[in-house]
Image 1 (cartoon, helix red, strand yellow):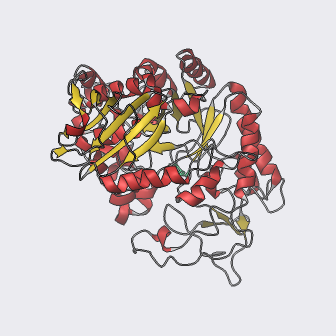
Image 2 (tube, helix red, strand yellow):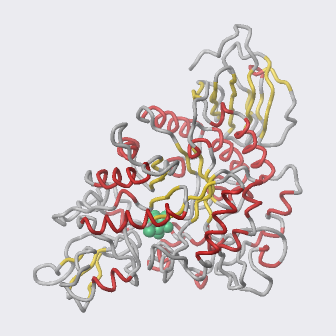
Image 3 (cartoon, rainbow, N blue to C red):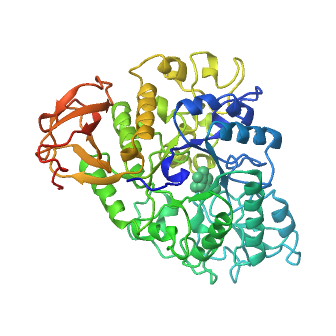
Length: 548
Ligand code: GLC
């Protein structure tokens, strides 16, 4: 039966991209008071933790991921008083708040960098990664930026290059210098003292780079599209020493009550699992598990990924799942609107903590933007592949109602990114009034997850040979057994389920069919793009169906 689980194991994490959630002051950019005015909406989603993308002072070259002061609020987002109020209101409703921590780099306007670049001989001269030009001039080595071009920019004053794996306005801190790491721990203490419940840690696997600054080898599998992928990044990320830093961050969290961190790590299972640390030396409570975002949307492929991940988890490690964020094309664009419901059912019924991206619950899609509307440096720096990698399309304003600007900003205000053309029908108000909408489905699903320990914390086991294009699994907690069956196809599928499941009751369907309907599970039929959650009655044999 259920043992005691921590909040970050039980609850759904909901990511807010603050620029795009709710504008309260008419500047076209979302802000903290805007979020405050929508806190009851968050409650209505049955989510338990809110993750805010960065809200710190920033020149916004990377929309807040270029931080100019780790311990303050950007005036565009509000004040520290607004932040405190938001935290109180979130806590008052029994939810938690996770803030974004961006340790790998600062803005080039951060006072630390301003001082560091002054000369080679100041107190912070070694706080960033500075290198002399190569003998004979030119770049120190072949390292590349994720955002296109080299990972080095020459600074005239110091006569040296500084390193940046993202925009040139995001110089990377030098964590080989212990003072810098101490400064990071101070930043964490600052927010912990203010009462935040956790951190989402940006690019946590990149914090250390090769001390010898060796060239990275070519990637033989490169498809010629994205320059960054032309090298294998063995010297700029996932260095073994990074785990030592993460352990110390964890130790700080463990010195406080019930705090957590979730690390941004895009790595295959074997390496990803190392970011949990071990029982004696824990690291991330959750290293984000992004693999379903890039998995081809087919039942067999998805099942294989889930089962492999489950099998790879070290003892005691808690799973988690992500289907969207501010760096990825929208879920409903990737898999289509009908399958978005199936995908949402998957996300919220797998074992482990789900993270939901704002707007996916109402079926927001990528918004195609003309070039003059691009804001993301990834698109602007690499126009030829902007359609593949640009991140503006998934960051457009939340759609609250059918008014001008979708209720995101007052009429007449120019939002920082255009509101999608479908906002007159795709919005919170319209969907709340429609029991068949994806939002109503989302709320029913999150309520079910909350009320059923089998879904929240129960065991997981996938089932073989159900039907083509169908992925089925059991979730169980004590006597309670739920069966999730997902049809990835646009046609009807008749299921062949193991004998002995007996009569069962549908608790929820993506198509909102009647919840009370009793069905004989081994004669079950799924409609096109349908997913269902069933409660299994005791079978004739009284036991669980035989596993696959
Ligand atoms: C992370 C963020 C992304 C940002 C990058 C640099 O990947 O999610 O939005 O651009 O780090 O901070």
